[in-house]
Image (cartoon, rainbow, N blue to C red):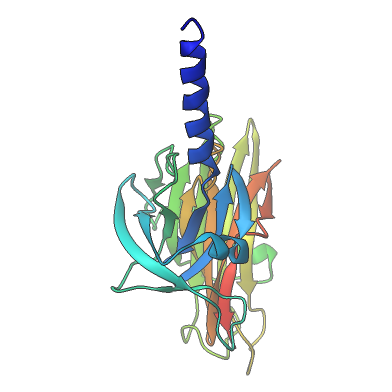
Length: 265
């Protein structure tokens, strides 16, 4: 009986390992598709995640700027033509955009508060204007569509994320000179300030036929339980849309290759 506590402890450890080993699917609801998943803290692609799912699955949809979530159930469907690599969700009701994690996620995806910033903040408008100028666009029309402040890495230093978009004729098959859409990460390390472009489309001359792109922030969340928050970007053009995920490593945005999805012609 002296070894009973040790045996019980080993049993508890086994239960923890088992709970952590479950694959947690990740869905982006505006796209309506499976991005991929997490297994033992590691990202896995959508195809691998799909093979582990059975019938319907319960998800928690997290609000971008609060710690609240809503619960819904959906089934992931296998790809169809023309989007042979897109695993789409069979939703029974309309869902707002954002990231949803499978119910077995054992960590808090929003470990730190995401603070909303005034979209008319003159400091951040100037930042966007400067970034546009650097990329060949000089304009007085600065339209910040999303602005958030958050400590991405848990190091006590807050970053700022800005999304800005301006299309004269909305998103279409053509675009006018001066149209733009971009997402900027403002990162401060000591006395050093960096304005990092995560992604962007800068139209420096009129395009009669092309595919101008529009970007917005879908989520800022810890998607694998490592305490660091990833950045999920939703993009669209006139015949399709997609989602990309970024991690910030040494002040450099690194795309998470196993966490992306999209469908378009």
